[in-house]
Length: 246
Image (cartoon, rainbow, N blue to C red; front, side):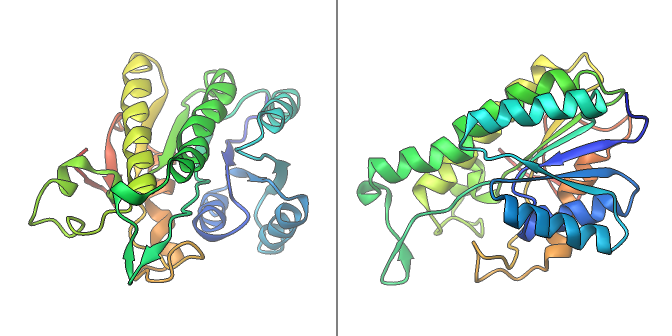
């Protein structure tokens, strides 16, 4: 079993996932770059290695359970455990009408299904596949990349900054993911595993052209939750050290 900490990040070949890999690498953690494209994953691995970080591409498509199984088998045979699992991959496929998101009454069931498949159901599948390996670590950490847009409390508060920004399928998929994080954290509360949800902030990425935070800032919350000490919290919704309402 590897003495070095091993971290697996889904969707780590670009954006917040790639920057998360960089920041974990800076702490001497072995980073497994989960990506659904071998070309993109190997390119990310090369970039990280050229910066001096211990990185390795692992084929992992959140929407393909065959890759979940093959990646888990490889990690178990090679490293014997998984210290950190960061469920970073996600999609946003909704459109806009006159500059505003399509409202709930006209968001198609197909959009809801596709969004939930990736952001919720298949993310659960990834977590359940890798949980046995996380349990083998001395201090396992599971991080779900969520969004403040999943907060029902803030969506219901007319004074909140997101009150008038309703992107139904994406937002509700993150609400559901938050619910799963709460339940998994409770299930594992008497173990050495900590489970938390991260809001990265409004980060300028390929998915968010209107972001106002850098990738460096956006990755900080996931990295902090992935490296919590033994006295750290579990079952929380966090942005840069501050707790958000569910």
